[in-house]
Length: 147
Image (cartoon, rainbow, N blue to C red; front, side, top):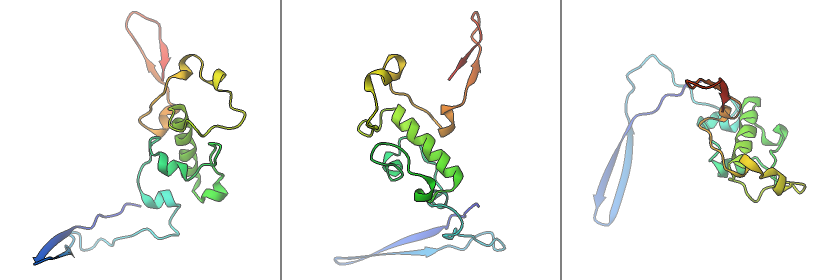
């Protein structure tokens, strides 16, 4: 559902020590278009929020996690299936990027999990980039899959 932004003008009036701020809603150019605002029944909390989260939004992601760093089940988070999958991917990306260093399961073996390339933090532009693979061709070399 696409929402319209409401255009308004802000006025500031100063009377001695008092400052009065008021706003006026401006008329829309599209008089025939009916505005639809999301209700509580239209989706989960993240769908209604209408922003795209990234793995760096750790304060929001922390609300959907247990103390051991795992994601709460969908019955407790009350997220839709799409947003639940996105939150799970984002939490995994945040863990791999080192943004939750203290949230580890009890049986987590730090030595084996931080060997080789896993010791370095990783970054992504989108939540689906964790699984996307691009075929990159470099002249004079073999074909290989680059993440």
